[in-house]
Image (cartoon, rainbow, N blue to C red):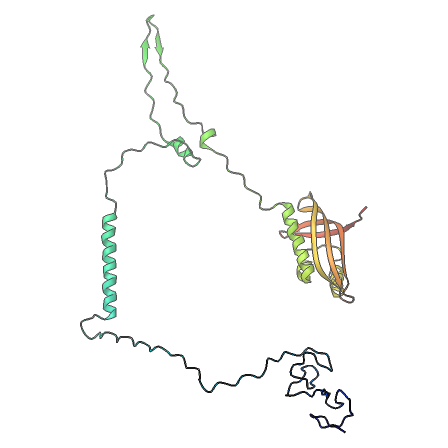
Length: 309
């Protein structure tokens, strides 16, 4: 009975594979090449394992032996140039600190000369400057407050008929303070509209739902919200069962109803995933939300679902 050339186990005539080492008996494999999947011996040019049908890496061939006749010459390194020796400072050259002092003194001298040359010379005293006309809001009151020369005294003239008439001096026209001297102050722009302030609260509420931040979530609700503690427990229980994948809103209507109170209509679009079944559900719901401004921030006081027709 013939023997397997690898494991020396007997096999029957016509048998294709060895029962012990799974070698191909019709054309015994040469070399030590094994399947990386099942570990059996395979042929050198075999592409698929005959046992597990795994793809075999292509064998490029044995690595060539390193040449002995002509070794690779080592790269020639150009000789490094030796830097010239530093000049001896013991001769006539000055030390570094002395050079620094000389340079600093030169800079100071140049700065003083430039200051003296470029300094404006004292010219003749300027003559009296006429008061500027009232063109801006700030200068108008000063023009109105300047002292004016007293008008010439009224003179009397004798009319041909012998009547004495008194000449009335013409009044000088002064700038009207209501038009040029005083200009109304520009209107102050509002810091933020009511809609923007309510959107800030809704953005915090959305972020708290997506991040499951209970502190940020409860900060969006009023301190006098009905069943505030129950709202906290129900929200945490919902987060335990579901996960918010996406959440967005549209602020349909905002209406102030009193001092620091408002009523808004908000439509939420939410995408949640069940933690138990991994099912994803998307739904939309509209709410009538009552808000109040507490400690400088708009907070939710009431929520009511709106039934869609």
